[in-house]
Length: 166
Image (cartoon, rainbow, N blue to C red; front, side):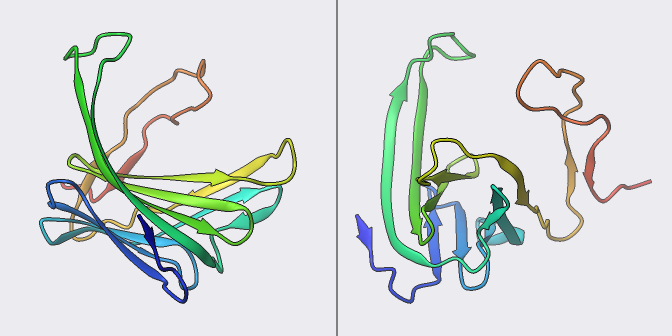
């Protein structure tokens, strides 16, 4: 369902069970907050994408916003812990001036975002992506350790985010 986006610079999104809330702002830069049962977990987390040395995200201008809900049972080709998995989320897709969009999703288990581009070039180079996780309070976060470089991503050794306790 389309949402009027003229002069709108903030958008709220809730998970299907209403426990997770994502608050998105686009006034000066795309940023978001994540709350669980009304308690802030992440605050003022900026997003940007550097495509061919043009940053997408700062000075964002929303052309349109479209919300949708999704609730289906997925049967993965390679069986996981369960043969069937429920995929359920609410999303808002923000179409931006400059040939790109950012889609935010709120699941019952967490939140996600995705940049999408519709640029005129047939190929582009992504030079970087900014995503900052500004945790509130004394959050402790562990990042998985991996030396696997056979994929298109790599996790550096020993990354730890959060407050260490003695």
